[in-house]
Amino acid sequence: MSDSSGMPMTFTTGQMTSLYSLAWTPSTTGGYAGTCIFLIVLAALSRLLLAYRHLIEQKWHDRAMNRRYIMVSGQNETDRERRIIGGGGEKAEEAVLTSKGLDERVKVVRSARSNVQGIPWRLSTDLPRAGLFTLNAGLAYLLMLAVMTLNVGYFLSVLAGLFVGELAVGRYAGIDDNHH
Image (cartoon, rainbow, N blue to C red; front, side):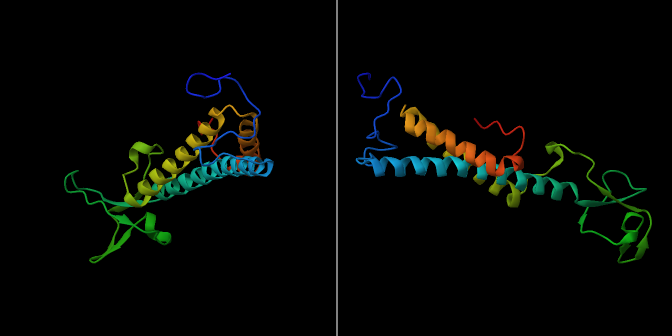
């Protein structure tokens, strides 16, 4: 049964269901199987991408939290100098070597905030983050469109791909990934 637009209103098992466009309409059993395999790979790829994004987010967060700042004691807030420095030696927590010699009034601190409000916007982090998010959303929408064909084979292929992807890399994805 279909409505006036020709879209099925119930699940169908037909092997000639178009996917994404009329040009992609399997005409043979092999073509249908290939389309189902494509959907399995696409769904598994979406889980791989989600796990990768979670791992890279952890790396970016750890890098932001490990940045160190120089704060000179005894100066008021407007005169306080803050500079990002790299990792120091053993004495780095106690004093900093400056152009005037060892300055023990300088304290090196790490960012104490563990939330995202304390992390500044950076092109080197936020551009790849936006790209990964957009790619993941695009994959999710393509999978949704495949399921919306109401073809049982396509639906089961998407589920199988999500299962395989989760089985392979689910332990690396975040718990709160909000991916359905």
